[in-house]
Image 1 (spheres, helix red, strand yellow):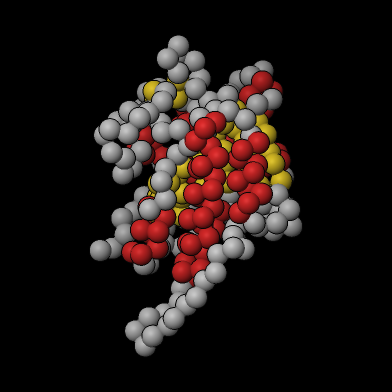
Image 2 (cartoon, helix red, strand yellow):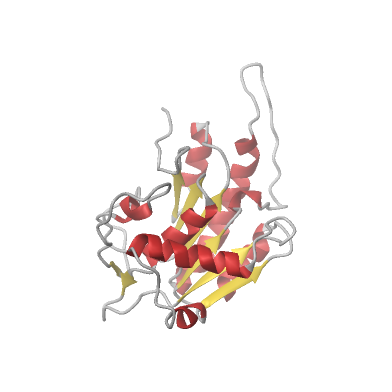
Length: 241
């Protein structure tokens, strides 16, 4: 994954992704180019992009990974969804996003007779508040070798995090200054639970391009967490120096 060191242990091996023209919007295939495998517990924290494309297509790429016997490495997909009142998408909407993401990556939809078998390993957990702790608990309860999807990740808060903002004449408070520290706590808590289970996590934050380097660094500093900042067209971008 991006930013990894060559001596970091990996599990599974990526199945070659189909060579197809670049996908419109977010195309995650470049993220997995030359990937030696996955780090247990790793999380990709995506800022920007459309949630269906981000979660569905990244899940599809992870589901391509195979174990030593060339069987699917991951055993299922778990979606930890926000409160319905704040994120009004049905279970069918969420399932369709992942099925469509698989079709985007593979170039064809799953056969109709296969879909029920896939959905039998598809779990949606509905939260009742935007707190970090219940999300980490849901990751721990999801089981082994799951692709865990967490939409609206920037909305979660850790009540124990006390933020103090000292604004000088040359500084200004941006929304990212508020949500990034909480998201770093979310990433740290969830990856710690996913690591012993052999799971991976895709976080999606429906936010604008990060402006401050220190906020990108705060996400990058979390072990096993890989931030991916998308541009206006959904493609990966580099932060300005």
